[in-house]
Amino acid sequence: MKLARAIHFDESDMNVFHSPARTGEWCVSGGFEFSNWSGADLEGKARQAFANGWLGLETFGRVTFVAVTQIEVAERDQIIRNLADHFVQYYGAPSIEAALGVAQNEIDHMSELCEDHAANTLLTVARELSETGVHEAFRLITPQDAQLEVLAVHGSLDD
Image (cartoon, rainbow, N blue to C red; front, side, top):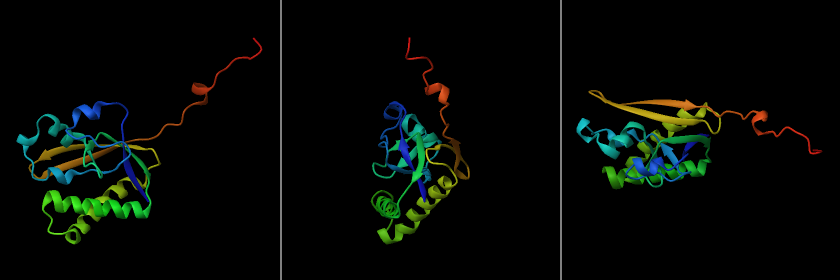
């Protein structure tokens, strides 16, 4: 089973998101956060989070890139419970039990998105707001094998 973890290549996420996700935390697209937004909400750092931020499932911060990796069943079950709790605390779900199905669907969607990709494949998300709601598009960046010539030192030790 696969899911994706937050990854940072530089410090830019620390500057563009109100609350950046922590490197290594499990992520989902998190488009549900924007379901009641309008164009007026899309300013500054909030616009950046909307436009291309994945949602971390520990800090509930945002990150630009995620990397596909394996997840254990116990970890998956725990992040489903954490997300259900988040739905209760921040979105008014009536109970953990009521929120578990929605949380499960979010994790299942992310797992399906990751399943056919090799480990370390990078994913990005792009969102648009239209009259019919939030539309998400996903892009992948496949891992590249390094060429031996790039790493090898050619020459002689006898010089």
